[in-house]
Amino acid sequence: MKKVTVLGLGSMGVTLAQLFIKKARKVTVWNRTRQKTLPLVDQGAAAAATAAEAVGDSPLVVMCVYDYAAVNDILAMPGFAQAMAGKTLVQLTTGSPADATESAQWAARHGVAYLEGAIQAAPSQMGEDNTPVLISGSEAAFKLHKQVLSDLAGNFVFLGSKMEAASTMDLATLSYVYGGFVGFMQGALIAEAEGLDISQFGKIVADISPSFGSFFAHEGKVIQSKDFTITESPLRISVEATQRIHAFAQARGLNTEFSALAAGLLKRAQQAGLENKELAALIQVLRK
Image (tube, rainbow, N blue to C red; front, side):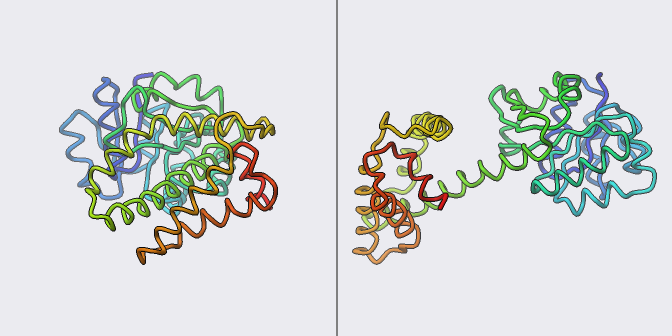
């Protein structure tokens, strides 16, 4: 179980290969541009001339390429499907749930055990005990290769056999990330308008993020329970807070797209009679 193949040597793919090498795995790498394999060969990897040759070297194949157009090109390469038969493919290319389903169907047709993954970290954050990677698909394959995969991340979250679960949850987490980032940009505008240090604002956000992460975890449990009795934060408080943000943006002539959206959604929740419910009750407005 010390052999592993890595297909794709972008910044993340290179990192994955290096992590395997550091754990003394016998690593075979392949990339369309062969030049990218040379530094890894210097570090102890073997470079294959073709993708089919690369997967022939190992029982475990990890693919991380630019997009699913590139994935499909590789899957269709001469000899690739035959070389993959009886092996496990861990797909770490970012894609949609439909992409995951299509690749899983390809794997089933060719006798390949398949795992769909979604990395939730940057290359520099890989290999840590708390590095999160979402994964779904063949539970037997995951259990078989979990020890090797733990070279890459210490926090693999197995979401079950539903093949598109990892990519779907990736969309959910990215919604949080980009929603939070747009809010961060609004905050930067507010701090800038008053001449405050935006780098200090960033530091404050970093410091409060763990406690808000715990709060969001609680709100997730509230939604799952369907019981919106107030436990942490009454929705009415956020109605007032988002209105203050929007009023400040308007008064300073700042961009109001985000503040108008947030204030508008919370106002609708209030009008729907949810002001004395837990903040998570906002989802009832969004569902409509």
